[in-house]
Length: 89
Image (cartoon, rainbow, N blue to C red; front, side, top):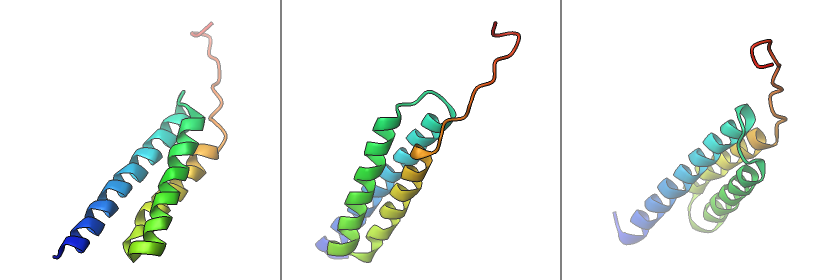
């Protein structure tokens, strides 16, 4: 592998980890009490970085883009409603 291929591989790995983190944050937001605006911003940044890499550098940038889209969809879904039980009152 030459230097450029190593840089592309490193970028794909780092942006993919960012995408996985965005998915986890979106799931925490969806299921618990996470920060929805931060989840949306993180997902949008992952989409932007992945798309830029996909268009300009290499086709491997599609992976972070897809992870960002999944995170964005999860972050904009309505939160799960909590039902109150007799124990909580």
